[in-house]
Length: 83
Image (cartoon, rainbow, N blue to C red; front, side, top):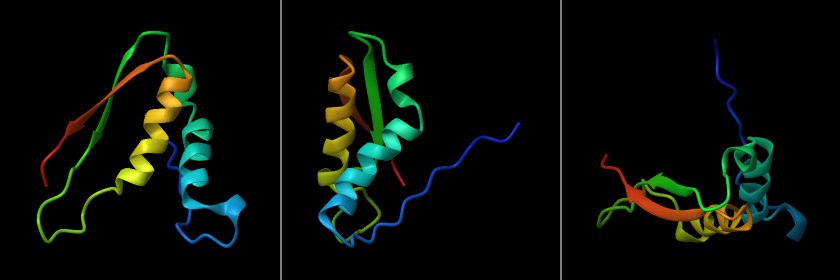
């Protein structure tokens, strides 16, 4: 069984198409809201980055996911992974 893959261009052509809004919409389209029950501890796995590296997600975008988890009454926490 293949899993769906969601994609959004990072180009922003207007305020309505800001990348932060795209991240929030991807959260909804992927159905993550349905997976979070009130008081669920919800790990957000990412790479915090290393000196001189650009292989990490900007905190500006991570914040959008944290806020969406909070809106769904979840308890978000960030967890790192190495590269």
